[in-house]
Image 1 (tube, rainbow, N blue to C red):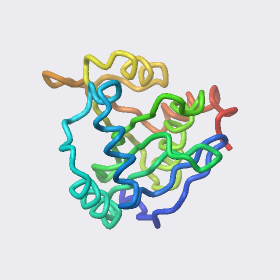
Image 2 (cartoon, rainbow, N blue to C red):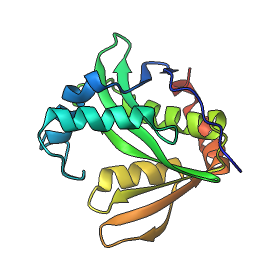
Image 3 (cartoon, helix red, strand yellow):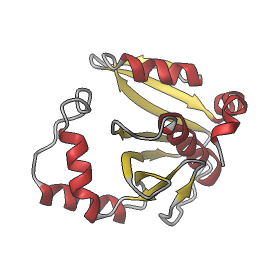
Image 4 (cartoon, rainbow, N blue to C red):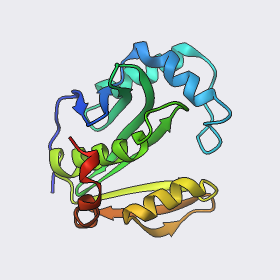
Length: 178
């Protein structure tokens, strides 16, 4: 099944929004990615602003990925999330970082918004993603949602989560959706 390429626009949630990242967000993204409390399980990033701006510029122009800044209701940036590695019937998501002080339920709500967008707006039937094995909090988060570990690499658990899995879980989280 081919997915629908959609314009990159704001996705509204109940207490947060996902808005397309812009090159002007590079300083915020770099701050998150270089924070030792947040980058333990991330790929290393060079501490230079211009390469980060250029990366965001390329991501914004790429019709096969969606890179979002997570914002609170006041419009303050509180995190990032990305949808990428689009396959015929599966999307991947990651680059998920929330800063301390993000709204209390921003993790759950941002995950729900990613699934709503991937399954219902883009039309995928499955989601695939990887999580570092040592990132036990995030591994357990995804397992509670119903995602299944279907493989591994030396460093990562490989997950799969179908639209049917999501629909079975979604009913428990309706209060977090707009």
